[in-house]
Amino acid sequence: MIAVEILQTVLLVAVAPLMAGFVSKVKAGMQNRPGSSILQPYRDLAKLCRKDRAVSRSCSWLFRLVPVVCMASMLILAAMTPFFYTGVLAPYGGLVTVVYMFTMYRFAMVLGGLEGGSTFGGMGSSREMMMSVLIEPSLLLGIATLAVLSGAGTDMGDISETIASMGIAAVGPALILAACSFMITLLAENARIPFDNPTTHLELTMVHEAMILEYSGRDLAMMEYSSMLRMNLFMALLGSLFLPWGISSTGEPVSLLVSLALAFVKLLTVAFVVALVESVLCKSRLFKVPNLLTVSFALSLIAMISLYIL
Image (cartoon, rainbow, N blue to C red; front, top):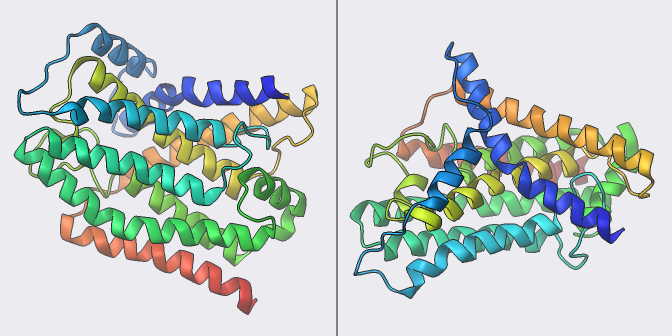
């Protein structure tokens, strides 16, 4: 089963730019534009890797280390995420570890924004930390709801397998509310509309782009790839934890093939929802962002309370 575990990790890493391209293509179609190819993110990353790195003289060694930390944290998290098989390479990594791996990524990006010496980088870092104060509690409470609902502890493979075995009985207010909260967290954590515009280059409004403004060449390629991988992991977690039906736990070839097909269907469905939300909504003002994140926290809190009331 080690080969299957390695395969699902490689697939999660390999299709991350493809999912980013799919979201962009769907958004273009909804806006009546032809849009670029869904393979365009691969070409962009390859082009960045061929370019030279330009680093400001005021930057320290920490600035060069940030892309490595961001990429490494997402690769480790990919090995811990059940995609189409409940077995994972890191059996001791539970949901709490997942939250703190995302936090490590965010902390590294904030340091990179500050180390760049750019005023806009510092502004983006401060905005990111403001949002993280509200993102992490709702994320922790949402995964705690899954742990209590399944009764399988915090191991992601066990939670996914238990909820899948419960069948239709697992569908209830707690799971639905927690899934809605997680979806809002997905948009906020990945700097998507309505929290941020991932395609903007207007310095006064951007958050994520401001923190990587000073990176170039291979460093920028690593930052962009880790960002794509982070969104792909969030979408995979939404499919494997909140919609785990069909995921394989036996390791039989037929079961694995069916599970793999269903996993990609879930991934494409979540990506379509992300594109739909970004096409329907517009970017909110910065001072309204805490209100949206408070809604996410309230949903996860109500989900947890409903487990004990119902």
